[in-house]
Amino acid sequence: MNLAPSPLPDGLQPLPEGLLWGRTLRPPAAAWDGRRYTGATLESTRREAVERQAGVVAVVQDRQFLGVVAVSDVYARQAAIDLAPVWRTPARAPEPPPPGPAD
Image (tube, rainbow, N blue to C red; front, side, top):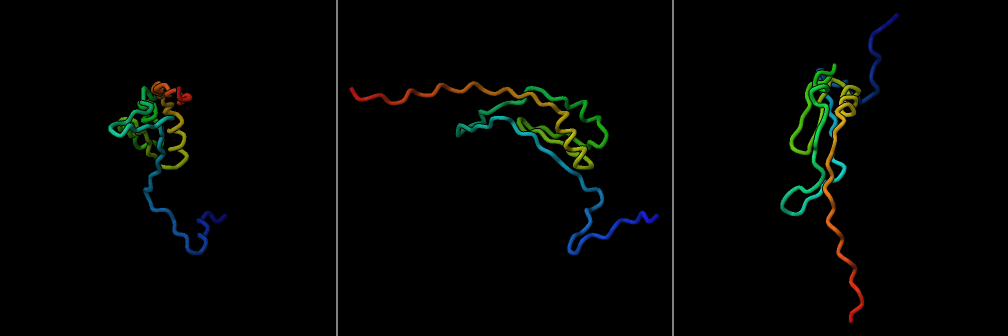
């Protein structure tokens, strides 16, 4: 039985050794009022549990940005799902009433 890797099609190169994979999680509502971020905020994740999972290299969080780095795309996808982020979506400001007929 020959277990040597099969040759790649013309023009394709093998992936580099040690390549890492990442996934990002975005808030369900992102907003900017011109001065600051006003969208959904990250309340909680299962970060500590995910950091201990096989294949996970790092969990990255910077305010509302959340991402994972792993040794394969499969591990990265599973870690992103397992983070189970809870977002707090801000209450929307009431819409102004439509203009009425002139009196």
